[in-house]
Length: 210
Image (cartoon, rainbow, N blue to C red):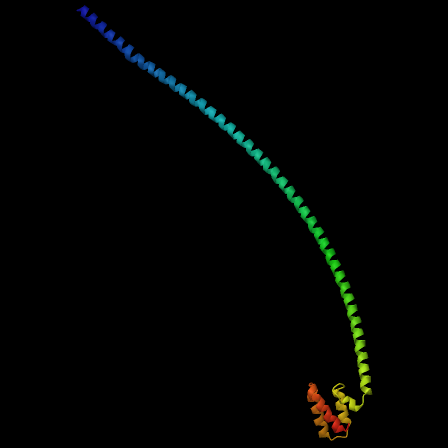
């Protein structure tokens, strides 16, 4: 009986040892390995996060430096552009001033030249008009003198015709008033046509007995 109990106890102990060896120990080892893997993963994640944070900080610093450099370059470019614009404005102002001065001189010169030319032209016109008036007066005087020397019969020709002198001869005659009127009307009507003027003057000469 005791032997059987002992054998049974040995079997139970052997079974317990086998369970411990093949079930509990591996489970504990798996748990420990999982905990180690989790710790390693956590450390790796922390390292990756730190590395990413460092990279982000470096990138931000580089971006900030690049932005500052770009801003400085833009400011310098703007300053250079402003200086160039100011220089161009000064040049344009100077050119405009020179052009205005040149235009003023040109206008003044043109006005002086035009005034001088107008004065010369006026003097020439006055001289020409005076000479023409003198010549016309002299010619009229000569014509009047020549007409005054003409005989009544000479005035009653187409060559020496003067309507006023002919009318005066008719008015100064002893002809009847109606005859005078008829003769003067005839002469006045024929005055513009030489072909009619000659016979009209002939009728006056006949009426006056010339």
